[in-house]
Image 1 (cartoon, rainbow, N blue to C red):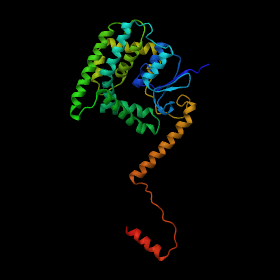
Image 2: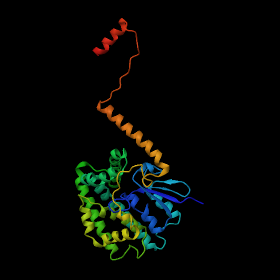
Image 3: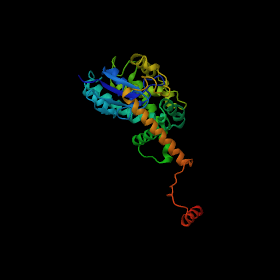
Image 4: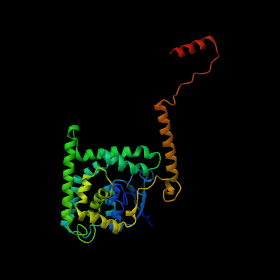
Length: 319
């Protein structure tokens, strides 16, 4: 009998089952709940506990590990877990069109909102990850994740000169506002985008909107526009209450400790402890060397106190 599929994703916070966009999308529990895929879900806040070292990641029933988001979706569809079976050809085309629209118009602004906007990053994004990640990952991983997201944003928007940044930001936000308005018009008074049952488009839209809606952002003009669209807000609330009645109530987790079985899975506990200790020691030694607290000097071989040795010692002191 094949082993069940296992999905590793970022844990929840801000009233959401996960705080990570990729983890929150159809890659994780949203897709599993919509399609009924038999997944054993591991909600964690330490990517080193993932079999790939990244999140999200899927371990298939045959032991293969998939860590690229769209490949996870492709694998689930190959396993016949697809929320779009009952869609017509036109609805399938609409799905592709709206998913492209989300990635082109809304995704860049979401990345900018959570990872580039300095106020949001310091007070919301980095704060959550610094509290959730174990030592010593909480010191350097949020900054590394920020750099990766900035590179991703650059790929989405292309290269821009520094003097164009303000104009670029204004253009991005304007397009995102129009995208939200278009989604609200397309949804109308329906429960889901294609009737009474959720499809993959609903999972993608929910993952984009719920993250923006739930986070307490100090700088949130796009969030304010979303909250002014009541049908999209009700849409997100409906999906949360229907598919995540317990997950939606989660709060940002405290920094993990190795005490309870919920925080560390047995196969990864020892590896995580060893890597944490080694990384901590390396960080402390590196800081000591760079700050001059500790210096390394080559020891001279022992010699008899003859005249030549004394002369060399005097030359060393002069140098």
